Length: 114
Image (tube, rainbow, N blue to C red; front, side, top):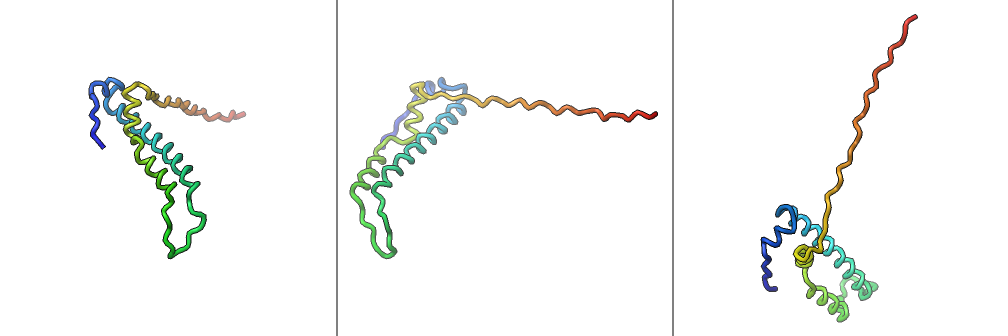
């Protein structure tokens, strides 16, 4: 796989700082990887052997091998996430801070003496 350099000036212009860009890109790469993993597992389930007996060699299913090779040829999740960032397709936001009201201390009630 050839090395694909990126222009750091463009990379840094997409976020407030380098850390923000890296974190946003890495989180998107994890999402892409998870989506790919789910898709791969769904497609490979169709070819999984029904029963496996110990001691028997499992034959390689050519359809299963074809699917595996197809997924190996796809671009990696980090490449997809970086491309999305560079093309301004990647958006992120910060969590809003929850404002928790401070507990109100109640003054103890004094008993009136008669």
